[in-house]
Length: 544
Image (tube, rainbow, N blue to C red; front, side, top):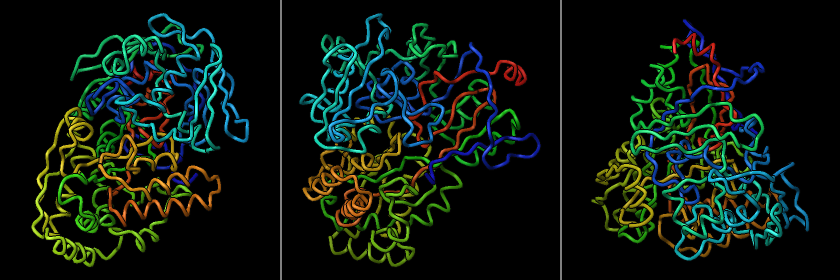
């Protein structure tokens, strides 16, 4: 699939680096060693069922298992899935595509020593797909097609679907679907995992020192034979990008899994030469602008439309791609995917995508005047993460200034940012994001459903819900394209309920002695660390 395949950039001493695909030689993994990673965000909670941030996934994912996962040896593929706690291959559906039967491995234990069975898998997916009243589930909309989940015995889980759906297996494979013990949910309740960890993954939890680090040690009872290779890992909290870069350059850290902007990559390669390896990929992640429709005047579609018309996405791409981890102009679907709307169609049909930014600005001013908001003032809520949140937020404020809007920026650390966005909903307009793992467009665009658990715009629209319901029920690609175009136009143009900024671009420099990790089109994928190993001789060559 075009736009998903990663690139390996080989750093060459004295010559910068050479772009292009580089075939990695097969090497025998070595056992032992500690991996130090740097993470540019704090952990809002440990519960992957409610979180959507790399700040949780990178330090916490290695403690947990999933039912299936993307193939860690081929994580760039949107269709290559393998069993994790299930055994054999990922099952084919029966009953005309409406029944999936998974066989669960025997002998798996949670880190507290209790066995993992089909009952735990059922309890986990019940929590995700059918959460009780008042219990959050960030990916509930992904499982709209699921009618029931049963565990007839300790090694069998059966998913019954309302209708066949090509989005089901990719949704099951998402890395946020941590397997929780039914006993923990029954005994401690559905919020216990927000502050407690009991997984069955390749590493056991040691400690979390808030604002400092998370450490894990090898799980000697891990069910994938011979893994993990590492003795353990430490995830160092470093919100400032300059600190993360210094840590890798100075050897205090080995890798950062989220991504750096181009200049940071170039500086590391210039400093370390062949001691650094860079992997690059398009990124299934995009920053949004989310107006709070319950706060005036953002209940007025004219105001929202003026906001999106003021954004020069094409000019912004040329400028921001040099300084930030954003690059590609696109709609609601991952760019270059067969279901994505081509840019020329976006220019012709969607407000804010025209090349004629001067005309768009005049149109925006006229709409604001018509709405009685020519001197509109508001506050933009933003997350205290430099790349790309603060960079893009500052750019947006400059864009809106051109149509007369006066915007202050309220930058908050991750935890209070999420609290305002999700719980208090006391913001005017917020930076938001749709960062997904597996490229699964029909599931990914559920973010824009008014009833989605991760849509914070606070509005209702029966037409959007109807279009999406029809989209879920068709397996015909031509029909999917038509419906996605209708859905996208409704979201971005007719309602301007939320706004796309620019899609991200992933650049991962890491110390060349870090082996086994392969980049994916998401900073959420391939983060269990069970395939990662340290080349000890090469590390010595680095003087570490």
